[in-house]
Image (cartoon, rainbow over all chains, first blue to last red; front, side, top):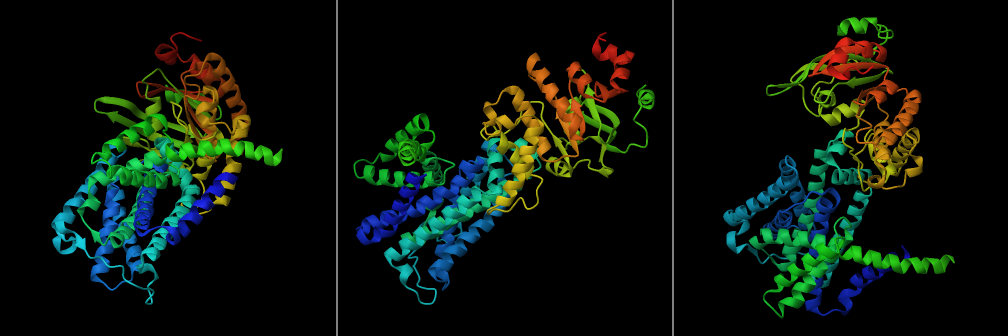
Length: 320
Length: 265
């Protein structure tokens, strides 16, 4: 407990101090990490806490990215408003997605989420007047404001904005999974028919968790397009759905922190390996297999058991 | 025959209000009639066993009453209200809690967490996504009370999936009781237990039923269990009621002996 607290605070302090010491390219990487971490964490609500395995979580990311890109290009909304509005819009659309997908369970549920993502992918290609078709949306500005505030438009300022979104979302999710609502989600994860028989309308709970996960995934996407300056159909491509699912599993599903670490691991590995070989994804695949076989609780699971071993003698020393 | 037995039964007078009333309840699966025109009344506070050979339609009857499957025809009344065709979770909210023939609980949670989640289902504002310390506290006291009723206090913190099979069966009853139900539907509570475990579980259940003041419907095919626990017995054969009355009356019934007991007395 003490050690994990200490670790948490040190990591947080490092993340806050990062813009002071890191070179520009590292700040870009770190910002991307924060955004992807938020994306992976949002999926964990579905996969880790409710056992709703989505093969199409990219739908949330792409929706958020296109929505905030469109708002920033076509309205005079300041950056934070555009981003939050895009996230809420994603959540609103997720009501329909959740309603349809929860008609099915298990693999059929996963397939329906994939189908929705593919549908959006096709729409992004065809609805050229809004999405820019295969070119996507380019030149997305980080507009100043509200009230002429320019802080968020700088590289460091945008990083802090993304970090604040991640930390805020983390505490929101943590509160959620520890609430009575979260207890019901765990019930659905372990035994849905029993949860239903106990008198819970499990379908409504599942729709609710899809909406929350999409809203936060949409928030990540909405941060990505002003970060990168563009939004294109790659942000709706199924490959990214698979990658984010891998981040959740490698990081440790059902832990919230784990998927963020998974995203960091994924990005770092991609960054390091891709400078040596084109086939970096192959190595990542091997790492993924190794985790599933030998460390099913992921990076965070390994870290926790290590911290547990550290904590035990330390506590004995304190109380002994 | 069924009517004659019911009339001869003491205690089943018009004065005692019936909590559950089934009226011509029928469930067909294609050509198969799983439940055939079943009508019965269960009085408040009664422990009613539903028995019958395998495939007699006992579990299907439970499924129809609790809304797991909709009936083909007929009505289910609970405390005078028509609950036919309501979804399972809504029927449970009315105060009918059930257990399953095959053990069904949350294996990775502790026994206490199992009962807490069950108790929480009956609380207001279950959607509250933040805090909820008060909700948890209420659920915990209801859950702990139910664990005590079923003699499970000593395993409260143990993971449910690791409990002995007998304790798992009792935990399921505790979960149902944590909801403060008006009717408890138990689907073969001793299913899969060894002779010894069954004897223990039945003693615990008998002690619990003596004090609990809850109306019970019980599906069971272990005769000893039935005769130990039930006040009245309804016998199903091929989906239809062939007898209905006190344990002694049912035991003596010739049709029951022929259809089910096979001469056992």
